[in-house]
Length: 323
Image 1 (cartoon, helix red, strand yellow):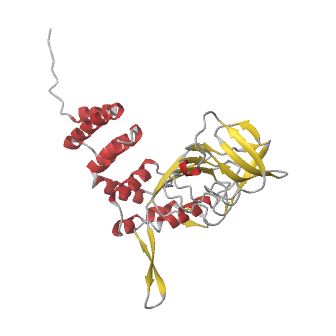
Image 2 (spheres, rainbow, N blue to C red; image 1 turned 90 degrees about the vertical axis):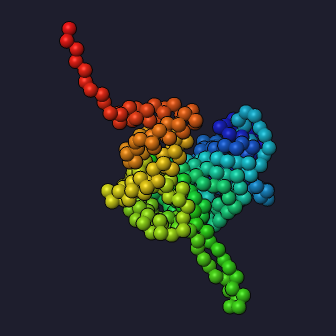
């Protein structure tokens, strides 16, 4: 087995082609790992069937070990964050099957061909971070959001560095056996289902996304998820219409204390500044927020809050002195 150095620890089984590398199996001992973009001067473009699935059967191919310092237990179930190769275009069936600890997936939008059940039993996956390449907009995000039912935090980074962040609320699919009629009844619970399918021709449509808000609030939903969704759209307002902005602002204003205290835990000074304006925070609300900032040790937030308090205090009479 050949050994090379790299950014992460990997045991790979691969196949070389004339113009690309196909990874057939990949096993890591790291909790945060990045698959290599290139090997032997060739781009890594394919992840094979069950490539990262723990316990998958061995396959024939070239073996390669990539080392990056200290090693631990070789078990992809411990993997928490995974960065896919930037040249990746094909992800085959069950590629991440059983990666139960995987929480965050980083990928580029070249990955436009995905097999079936790629993320099956990835029960902790909540964060998708997609980087645009400028070549084309693939349907990767549409597929991932459609396959995952839990709440998702999605970040899309454009070629110029601008970010769009979105919350996709959870929903539940349920099959209930209908014994008398000898079939299963299919039901969907929760208001998140339309959000996970807010794509047109596999492309994200933010106007449709924002248009779901009023209906979402009427359906069964988690109020904290709604709070995060509204805040996130205001904080990263890509293609946000004036009407949608007004609706999100009104919702947050109705939960002023909850959203402000939550935001303090995020340690995002720009986000706090935005909320102070959206909520028109003053008086007792500012006082409680200052107490929470002190408790959290969030000195930057405390400075912003105290400055706002100072600006709202009534000014005393101007004094003049004659010498």
